[in-house]
Amino acid sequence: MDVARVSRDAYAEAFRSVTGRPLVALPQLAGASDSEIFFESLALNAPATAGPAAAAPADGDLLARYSAALAAAFGSRRRLLATHGRALPGAREALAAVARLPGVIQTVLTGTIRENAEEKLRAFGLDRHLDLAIGGFGSDVYPKGAAIVRAIGAAGQRYRVTVSQQASVYVADSVRDVAAAKVGGVRFVGVATGRSTPSELRDAGADAVLDDLRDTTRVIAAIGR
View (cartoon, rainbow, N blue to C red):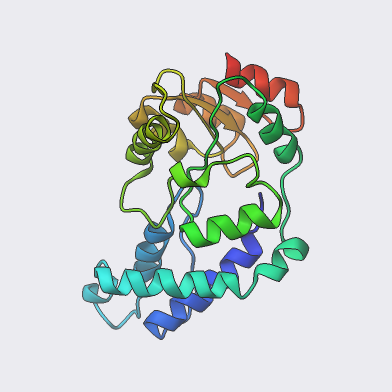
């Protein structure tokens, strides 16, 4: 989905709320977690006269307050998602088609904190084919590669089945996500609807690359392969 405009406004409000400073510059967002975005934003937006200490990593309390402020800022904008955001073409159809495959369990792995991820998914009806209880979110302390392994383990426990890394597929749109898939030991299907181009995704090691999700048959074939 594309909700960049709403997200940027929420980031700015939450950042000002906990730091007292405006968010003038945003770091690279693709593949980053909300906590990473916050830490990098602190460095990018540190007062020029404040010295290196102003860009030092935030403590846990500051991050917790930022996450709470971010959830509140995004929640207050939920009605804007329908007008300022969109589900990418083919996303709903792809999720529905994959859900019909025998033995498939679908969840989400995202850098967005859980509250905001759920808001986004519900706004576009994308949550109905996902088990969010076993997902990974930006509010977790684990990097994405480790979150993949944890999600696989959680799926096995929840459904009382054996879920292997070799039979798991991560579908995402950035080269940072390719790296996470390698750490997690799963196959990766890249979708070039983000900032990473098809060639960048291939060069990073994606097992398959799609231009977008419009062709559901190709999505199913890539995941099955």
